[in-house]
Amino acid sequence: MFIVENYGLAIFLCVITMLCWGSWANTTKLTSASWRFELFYWDYGFGILLTTLVLAFTLGSSGSHGRAFMEDLKQAQSASLFAAFAGGVIFNLANILLVAAIGIAGMSVAFPVGIGIALVLGVIVNYIAVPQGNPLLIFSGVALISLAIILNARAYQKLKAGAAIKLSEKGLLLSVISGCLMGLFYKYVASSMVTNFTDPEPGKLTPYTALVIFSTGIVISSFLFNTLQMKKPFTGEPVSFAGYFKGLGKDHLVGIAGGAIWSIGMSLSIIASGKAGPAVSYGLGQGATVIAALWGIYVWKEFDKAPAGTKKLLNVMLLLYIAGLTMIIFSK
Image (cartoon, rainbow, N blue to C red; front, side, top):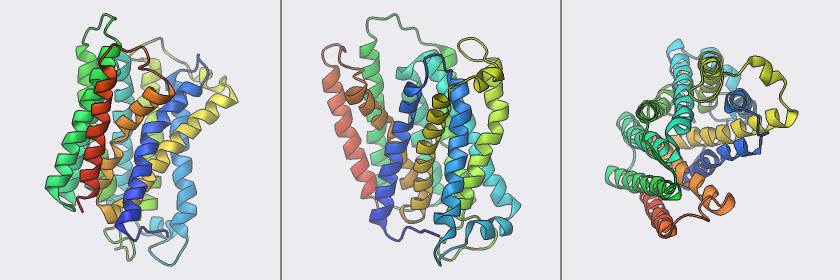
């Protein structure tokens, strides 16, 4: 199977992860205006699973190092399979709650609270599990990226300065719960995997197998979580399953593409974690929030009509973000 052999390549893959995680949501802007997110989410999940299967049967089954996907799946212990599957279920619930929180409380509240908690908690949990890298540089980098996320939220608040904004306690609570869950899912996937990718120990999973089981957890749990979301949405009217089958082919393909983009990011992060360490891989990946902000600034022109001072805020955000990333990269 394909294995990352050096730290430089691992960091490069983590940067690609950050770009993928910060970009997949753009696909939601490419669907029909009437295509609800709940319907989009089915194809998103299918796209994640399909991508991990393709990687498992190609990169995960070639070469002389490690264990091929099918061989690895046959020898896996139930505890390892459960951990990877649980990671998918936890991520799925966190993701759905975050989207609900954005719908209720807005981007300026949900993102800094949800992703901020996920970033800090995720790095702490993963570093405790596998303490690789200089902790001072890692956590200083995380602190700077957290500040960048807060400034990003402040910029969104200034953008909506003319609107009547009321803090929603429900939205805030959902953001906190989502952030806590989002900060934990990666640890479960990492704990299911072998520690030596080249000479994998028995019972544990290679990265490619872990990713397939993780993705299966997402798809299967969607039949509970997304079905509930369709029948009793946090915002808007209920959605029927019949609506999914009436969707345009373009809408389905866009959803699958969105899932594939996110899945490529997740896969590269997991593959890189063997050399970079889970804390660094996860920490760099969660810098995706600022990548999403860059899409909003330069492509979707969300801040063109923002009040004076907003662009200065965004420039400081970018400087903090770059400084934080630099610290994390040089932590090992």
